Length: 342
Ligand SMILES: [Zn+2]
Image: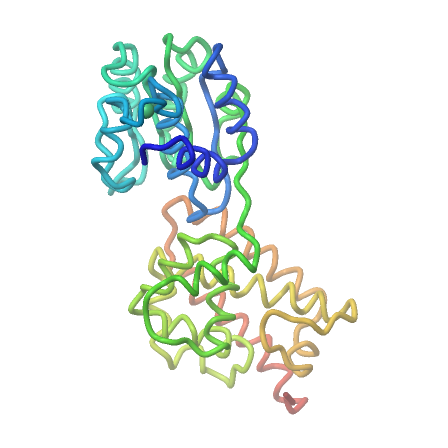
């Protein structure tokens, strides 16, 4: 990673706003505080690290073809295990919140002069999990950050941050990759050949997020995940409860997957109503007839509500059982009268 060309290619992967700020940041000062937001697994933290690397570089482009000490330090580690004296990272780790003593420690460390790079960066992951007092403790620093610092808040749920925090940051949105980019990404992953149905499901449920795609692909539980769309679209009474799906859907990785599947299915039903037959899941007309418009809205509201609640400690197994039970009942009540056709 010594040549200027490599550096240019890396820059091109960043959102345009960050590329422009990078250019500006080499000659003058740029805002110090940012909010990186967008779906989980989309590469927000990698972007924060890459952007920091480029901004901290003391000899941009490395004209003499040797790495500056800061870039050399970045090269020693993978993004997952980054250790750089000028990169301060804070995340809830195994905890469910980021408490105030952690933010206080970060603020105090941030005021030290950079050791290797031209700046210091603080990256706060899962920033929506800052406790209210922790968030408040950050306000003053965000408003008047120490010189030569960058503070990057990272979250998939920007709406759950205090408005006072939001208003003090430059918003940088990350959107999903295109279907083509995701197909390329999937093709490059090592592993067995997938059927086209499996590929479709993987692409659908990773929602343009390469990290999500990789996590699903590598999950030993993927064969179970793959069963869910069929269980939801062809439910005989009790099918959903016969399978080993319940424990999986109640765990932290499975729960959002259930909500995604349910939401795609509901959107398919709306789409069919509008005369569009290109659905993302195999939806039968029987299923469409079974779920009235009113029921659809009710389930959609429920899915959205559960998504917001996911970030708090809710009883997931109970939520999953209730949701699947009601879905099953809704379909069964009509199936008793109308035979379901494919
Ligand atoms: Zn450098």
